[in-house]
Length: 139
Image (cartoon, rainbow, N blue to C red):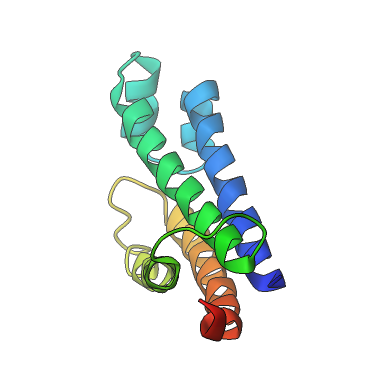
């Protein structure tokens, strides 16, 4: 079992659960987590759009969690695990780096959102990268 991939899976799972919290608790959570005032307002108005977007993100993060657990050897082997982990790692790291470019022009979010989410994404990317490197030969 690969501890870095287990940690990666747990962290992606936690982030997925937090997104479910946004759906359940609505506008205050969208605001707190920096999703933007537009998402919060749509949630307050009863629009389905925030739920659909957040559900999609939750699904993706849940799948990423499962791929990390699969590569770590704690659940069944998923198809294309090596390719999936390469892409997941790349996306986390790229999102982390690119997010810092939006701090001065936050695009409807707060600068703090971009800073914190970028740090989180970079951290998740590095944990995935270490785990992927350690597990590479067995994938």
